[in-house]
Image 1: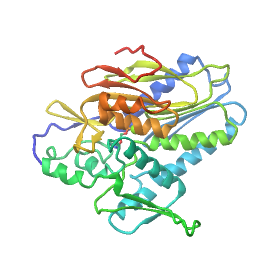
Image 2: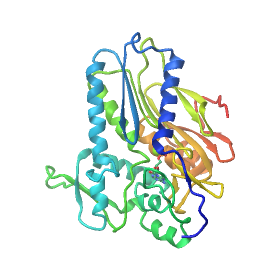
Image 3: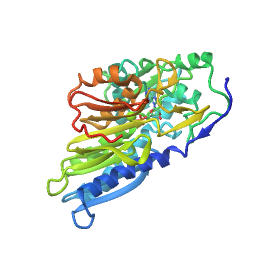
Length: 355
Ligand code: AMP
Ligand code: MG
């Protein structure tokens, strides 16, 4: 380790995520002018996924569907949460380099999505980013380093333990009743689901709402929001995208219908050293925190897609990132670079941005 100590950790992920979430909800409420008792929207907020998850459900059956959706999101989160020693993902991490671990269908599906986005983004998104997060002081509640910044040798050592291709998922074709298994091939490897679990879990919650007959709902989980249908009276859901340098103002306002939006930002979890900001998204190829973006917002058909892609585009940057986005159906992106430049994908719907 080298470097001098100027280690000012931020006020914690929960607070900043909460602010983003409240802004989103406030915006959706205020802009659409809803009042809970009048418009038939049932709302509930619960702490989940290291943030607060807000669900708004409209129409008949909302009162029954809402707790069912929370139960499903809590179930799936309990399987995936790598900070919970009892989760299936923690069991895979604990056995890295050893025996395969049995995993339930939701864990298999989530990890298969993660592997898919690893391939799609050329490794910019890597679900096995854990060792680099730990090295850079992000594998804990309060980000920061107790000593100096990691040296090049340590970075390269940790980087060797980051490779999503070493996450093996096996489902027995001969005996389909047997559970699938998952395994990390090398000791010291570690899965971290932080980049996509909010999106995946919100998708799971939305599926339960829809299975209960709900046609209009919003699930907001930190930086990811999943919208189904329209509000009663044909109003679209409206979401404010946080300004990356001013948490009390919006960069832009989006209308959502049957789509999802996720924002990744360098303001979420970071610390500073000698005036330089070190934020929680790490380039797996270089082994270092990405400093080239302030925020990335992605619209996509599913929460897991927008969540995974917003993190990946943060790593890829405007040139490579937009090249990828412009090949993906129903995916659009807005990037604010470190220099404050605003970059839109080809069909980004809302070009009024106040920066
Ligand atoms: P998000 O706010 O969705 O962009 O997720 C950021 C979180 O993703 C970080 O706090 C880490 O837990 C994790 N992460 C950081 N860098 C990467 C990466 N390159 N690939 C996958 N996950 C990452
Ligand atoms: Mg993400």
